[in-house]
Length: 86
Image 1: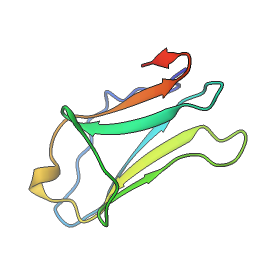
Image 2 (image 1 turned 30 degrees about the vertical axis):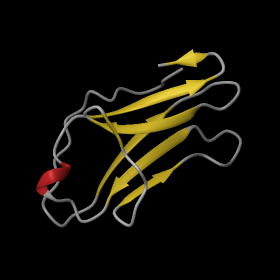
Image 3 (image 1 turned 90 degrees about the vertical axis):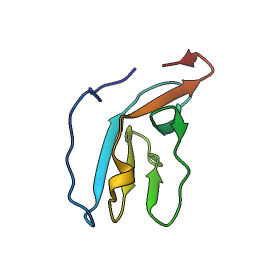
């Protein structure tokens, strides 16, 4: 179950950081793949991905550090567990 809407528009200034949050609940806990357009985002020095580690926490985040013009685009998340994919 997704508990928030990812259709929001976010703006960031070059050099700033941008964080996108997603709440997802499932049993077992879902895996999240963050995407920009059709491309999977791979964690790096500038892309930080965090998943909940404590029971009761359902917030997944992706933070883009030092935002650059090439970071512009449509971001989404693929949410998957044994029950299926959203």
